[in-house]
Length: 301
Image 1 (cartoon, one colour):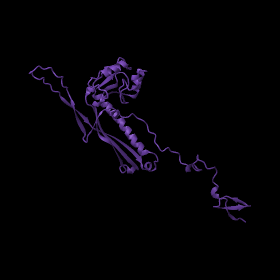
Image 2: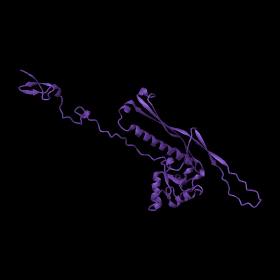
Image 3: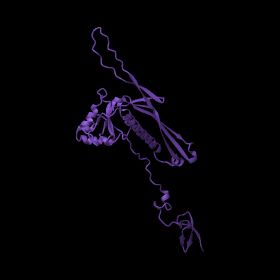
Image 4: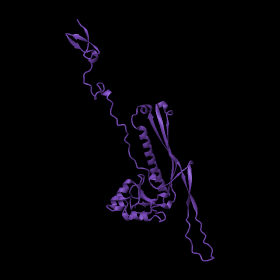
């Protein structure tokens, strides 16, 4: 006679055959110990470990923000900056009751035009719902780095376009000597060569190449000639006919902006695709305010 009894788990009925308890059939399909390797036998119960911080890449900071550049803000689409054209001459020795020497300077103006730079990032509704990392914080940092990269590219192009032709030309197409670098500094008019306002701009690789040229000379390790080096990987490399190094008075490089970055989230535009759009925009303009305030070093052909 078969009797229905509780199994050893005390929760499900089993069958007693010859005094032995046979487990309920719901257990009969388990053929392996619970583990984390196979989903069906336990892996699904153990979520993959996730470090909740996104490890960001690294980019150069904006040299426009690091250097002593002239910064302006405006609600308009451009800004006219008055600049001296031809300078006043020196005073003239004048005899008693003689006529004054008349001399008027001329006035010029630099038009700093703002341009709009944009970036669109899309994210699925599922991602935004399930994401368990520092996505928002990381995205804001990533947008900030993208802004710095944009400034480096556009501002460096403006410096190349507006600055005067080379201060000096090197003897070699692929090398720069310490005397040549010193001559570049000396090619800048003394009126512009003001401590605290001047510096070099070049690629990171060019700076360290020059530090190697300086060797153990202490000048190399506090900037170059004790003047700061601003880095832009949008500067040209050391190569024939290229301008790898510029030196100048950064007070006379202007940046005009609508302050900050506008970041807007639109949950409706891409709703049909189950996506949310994140729109970021900045308004910036760059230009050299006095062309003679910058000199470039031209590599020999």
